[in-house]
Length: 512
Ligand code: NAD
Image 1 (tube, rainbow, N blue to C red):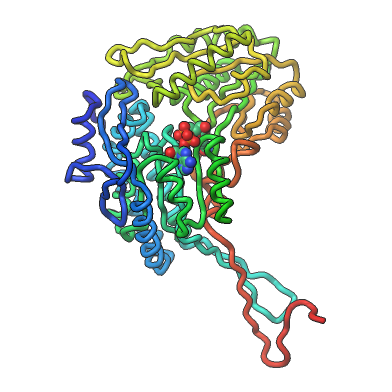
Image 2: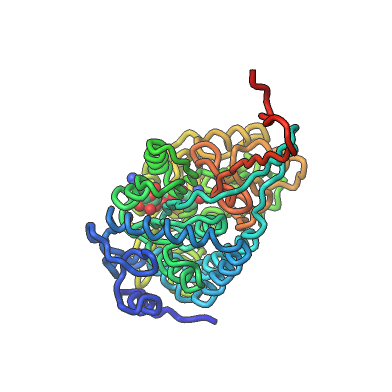
């Protein structure tokens, strides 16, 4: 089924939201109801037109406190269900998401500025996340440990209770599903604070989860600013763990705030991933892969292949070909079915991209393609930026070290395998990376030596809820998705049962 989104303004958003929240209001989703905020007004801007389309009030401390009360209560009843019953309800969540997929995709496209075709894919991935973790509910078993005494010793994977999740604006509904599904699978309740810029789809997702039959208050969405609502959620005594997806700077501040309460964090932060092309690679495939790696989502992707390392012998050829190809990519309005590259999400980010590209040129980089605001009919005031190829880049330049988070690739030459590995690892980040080569042995050698949480061979950006994802270095710590992501939402308890028939109590160690 395919809908045509004629325009993306105030009326369209109101109509879409009214399908879920008929009273025509917007706020935080607490205990199964929309609750207005108590703080400053937040205005949402359509990135393609720079026009405001919705305002709401920052949740603030009292709304966070209400969310915490709802979450504690719901968690107790959720954890009291049989694991298989939780699994069935999680499967129902996926059915709800599939039924509302088009509305979710359109809302996402409007507020995040993402091409509608990408949004449709991401929403279906959210449904898959609930399906995957539905299956884990009754398989999350502990171990029986063969202790050398008469005790039965076993482990239990218990939920933290209430977890706070803080997410960014670049893939809002995908990130919400990615974190909510494992959290509730493990038996937790959630307080999710999406980016203040993109709260719509996360809030609708929480409503759909409740429509699936999950207890009211199990998933709450607290909408507002990070320094107010986000900080209040971390400081609240109900929060037992924080999962943060966002920039390294905010991640460090959040980990510090969590440390003051002695609660753990998962940090999913930024990246400056190296995409390495050797001269024996299938160059046609590598060039298509390199474009997708950095220009998809207009480069607003944490794993973007923003450093393209190319072996010296083919460097000029690759720069020329990727520069030519990048001028043909359809940059356009997010609601057009043809658009592959939409606008940058917000004015601040747009200006940051412009400033970093100018800095790169000042340091000696050469613009082989792009480097300007993109002209888009109907989006004259929008934050569109041309796919940009920077050649003659040295790995120590800021455009090779800083996360630009836009459609900008820095192309860097290398000599041989050792040089490629050294350059790839000359970064404070370690989120993703890739190698393109026909040499199988080399592919595995490089995969083993590049510091990155995810590495691809002759492909890029393959990601699935079944596989663990996370960073090395300043790209963060802890893992999301897969079994490892599920364990992040549990704490292990070791239970000892004395099975001796009689005689003195055994301690399992010598007590003098
Ligand atoms: P950001 O760090 O500015 O904000 C992320 C979230 O943190 C927002 O919800 C924001 O309101 C909140 N926040 C800000 N200050 C806070 C505070 N003091 N206390 C509590 N919460 C606070 O990031 P952004 O600009 O929204 O997103 C872009 C960044 O996200 C990029 O660096 C990108 O690489 C990263 N990202 C990482 C991943 C990953 O999985 N590794 C995925 C997507 C995005």
